[in-house]
Image (spheres, rainbow, N blue to C red):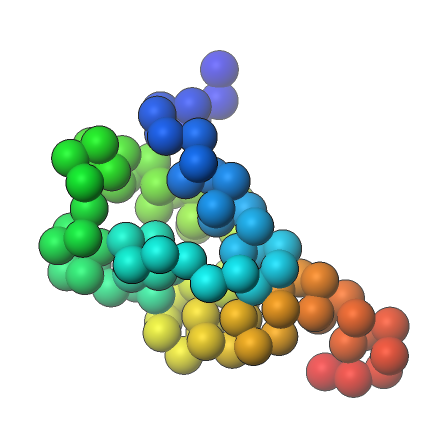
Length: 96
C-alpha cells in the first residue's frame, strides 16, 4: 500500500496527474493546492478533501514536477504550456 492510498477520492490523483501531463486547469480546491494557496484550499475543501489535505500536499510535493506548482504564476505558466506534453513538444521543436 503506498502512502497516497490515503487519498480516498481517486479522482484527486487523476485530476492532478492530468494537470501535470496536459496543463488541464484544475477546479478551485486543487488549483488552490497547486498554487500554494493554503487559505483558499482550506476554504474550498469538502470535508473529505479536508481530511486528505496532508496526503494531497505530499503527493504534489513528491510526485509532481516542481515547475507546475508552488505559486499562481507557476500554475498559469504550466497551463499555458500544456503541461509536460507542451514542454515535450517544445523540446522536440527546439523551443523553450
